[in-house]
Image (cartoon, rainbow, N blue to C red; front, side, top):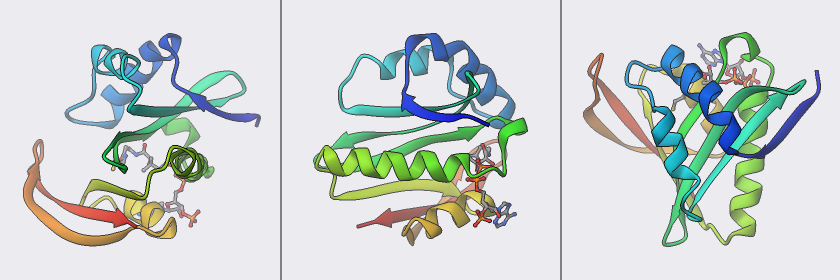
Length: 145
Ligand SMILES: CC(C)(COP(=O)(O)OP(=O)(O)OC[C@H]1O[C@@H](n2cnc3c(N)ncnc32)[C@H](O)[C@@H]1OP(=O)(O)O)[C@@H](O)C(=O)NCCC(=O)NCCS
């Protein structure tokens, strides 16, 4: 398996929108991904496995803080460390861009995602009750400072 992690490109958008639709009840659309390419405060990475788009992770950088707001890996590539490698690369690139702290929200039942974030040094600092829809669920607010 040849894994490459690189910045999001326009040609990734179709594959990512399909991946989102399979992974989330309220997925980002192709337009949402296209919008990310317009702003330099958006830093989004794509994982490519043997030339195929396998996942995406990214953040918006505002006032020196990175707000991670999309993490997805396609079903068939899960459990191979791809999300963790993307996160590691995102944190490295963020440090180069002067990001001092990172935050994100995650469904309180999403044990795999929470595990990955905790392993990378994120700590749960609060809860947003009923933050998510379809189904309604609390969000953990996690920070890495
Ligand atoms: C969450 C997601 C991005 C993880 O991607 P991935 O590439 O499979 O993740 P990795 O292989 O890098 O790591 C998975 C880790 O979670 C662990 N894990 C898997 N299921 C778990 C569970 N139910 N409870 C706890 N840990 C779990 C694995 O053991 C592994 O950790 P380890 O390396 O310490 O053993 C992927 O499952 C996904 O796209 N899910 C749907 C979208 C989503 O939920 N995104 C997160 C939104 S905040």
